[in-house]
Length: 613
Picture (cartoon, rainbow, N blue to C red):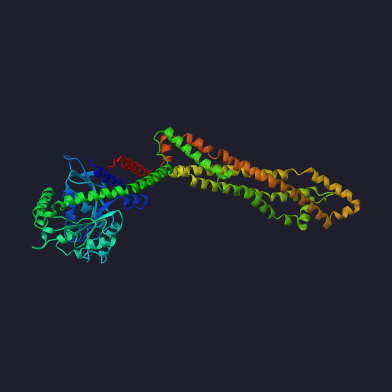
C-alpha cells in the first residue's frame, strides 16, 4: 500500500469510528471537533447537474436513487475503501452494521427507504446524514458527502423555504475549512449561472479548496465547447477544472456497466477534437485520483492537529471511564466484594463530613453551641418560679400541715417541675443532630460517584444508614432523658442543708414564723430553686452534647453500616445481582466510551505507524 493510500485510508477509518459511535453530528464537542478536523469532500451542485452520475462514476457502481426533482433529501456520507483485486465488492450502512450488501440495487433501495424513514414519502429534506461505506478494488480511499441539490423554487409538497433550507444545510458542510468542495456544473449551461460556483465563491473566495467539475460535455450544442472553463479562463480556481462524461439516460435505462461507461468516457476525451489535448486530465477516474492526491497533502498538513485532538479525546475518555467505573463481575464473591467496597467508599465520605474533611459536620457543633442554649433560655422558668406559682406549689405540698422550717416537699416539686422543662430542649438536640446526620448521609450518597452506577444498591445503603441513625436517635433520646430524670430523682444534699442555717442566721425565731407566709419567704424559696435549677442547667448543657455525640455521632462513625454488612453477608448470587442492577444508560455509556477509546487508540497507533516519504 502506498503512503497516500495509508494516509487517506487512515482518515477514512477515523471517520468510520466517529460514524459508528454516533459522534458525527452529535452534541459531544470533542468528537464533533475531531470529525471537523478530518478532511472530506462535499459534492455540491444544482438539481439535475449530474452530481449522482459523477459519484457513481467515481465508485464504478450504479447505486444512487434517481428520479425527477429533488432526489437526494438527506446528506449521504460515502466512504470508499480500496480492497485487493479479486475480492468481492460490498457495501455497509452505519444504521445496519450487521448487514453486508453485495447487490447494489438493494443499496439504492435502502438509501431510499432510510430517507423515507426520516422524511416520510414526501419531498421534505433532513440534515441527518446516511452513512454508507463501499469496499471495492475499483475505488480510491476517499470520503465524499453527497448533498441535496441546490434549488430556487419549491415544488408541490415542499415548504416555501426549501431553497433556503437546502442552502443552509449545504453551507453547514462547506463552511468548514477542512471541507474540499466538489462544485458540479453542467457544461450545457452558462457557468455564470452555476449554483455550485456561486456558493463556493462565497465560502471559498480564493478558490483554494474548490474543485470545479463540468458534466454533460457531450450534450453541448454542436460547434461549442467548454475549453474556456476547463482551461480556467472563464472562472479561475487554484485547483484544476475537470470535465466528465456521464452515462446517457439510454445507458442508464439499459443498465450499462459502470466500468464500461468509464472506458467509453476515456474514448470520448481521447478522440474529441476539442478536448483531446486534455484527455489525460479529464474523466471520473482522473478526478478521483486528483482528489486523493489533494487529500493526501491536506491530511499531511492536518496530521499534527488531528493527533492532538485524538490525544485530547483519549484523555477525556480514560477520565470518563475511571469516573464510570469497572464493569460488574459475574462471580458472586466478586460481586460481594464490589458491594462492600462501595459501602466503604460511601462510609469514607460520610466520615470526612463528620471529621471536617468535607463541609457539614460543623453543623453538629452549631446545635450544641447555639441551638441548645437558645432553647434552654426560652424555657418558661420565670413563670414557673413566679411568686404566685411558688406560693401555690408550696401550699399544695404542705397540705393540711404547714411546713415547720423549710418547705422540703415544696422545694422538691418546684425543682422537679423546673427540670421537667429540660426534656424538650434535650430531645430537640437529639432530633437536630439526627437531621444533620441524615443530611450528611444524603450528601455522601450524592458525592459517592461509584454508587451512582447502582441505583438499587444506593437506595438500599441509604435506607440501611437511615435505619441505623433512627436506632442511634432512640438510644440517644433515652440517654438524655435519663440525664434529666437523674437530676430530678436525686437533689444535691448541700443545697437543702443550707436552708436551716439561713433560718438560724436570722436570729429571731418568732419573726421566722411570720416570714414563713410572707412574700419575702416565697421570694427566697423561688430564688433558691432558681439557683439550683441554673446549676443543673449548666451541668446538662455539658452532659447532653456528650451523650448525643456518644450515642449518635460516635456510633454513626463506627457502626453506621454494621447491620447492613450482616444483612448483605447472608445474600446469595441472584440477590447480589439485583443490588448491582446498574443503570442501563450508564452501562451503554461505558460501552460506548470503551469502544471510542479502543478506536481512537488504534487511530493514534496507525498515525504513528505511517511511514513518511
